[in-house]
Image 1 (cartoon, helix red, strand yellow):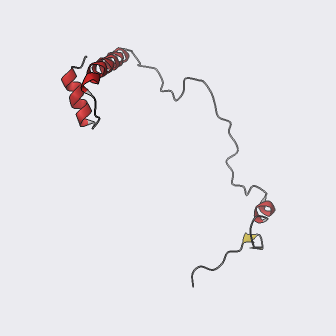
Image 2: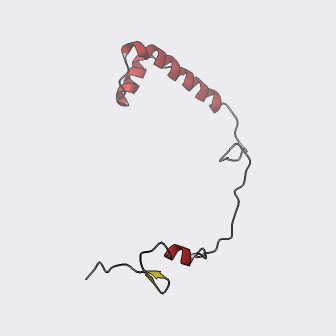
Image 3: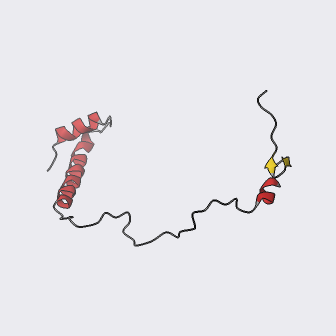
Length: 95
């Protein structure tokens, strides 16, 4: 499939992209080339090919799915201006 200059100008207008008249020829050629590549890709038989998320085979390290407090309560509370019984103390904002 190849595009003509008028079609490219219409596409640019619909996309609200200003393309100078002297650039339409090269843009038409580039877009036609892209469409030719897409047509080539469409000819590939991908039946039986599982979907992939990456071309590199890799697995992510897993950790135990457990809720923890990080065991650093005292270090976190050391940054607080005030604390009481292991909790942050904040000023009352609602009367």
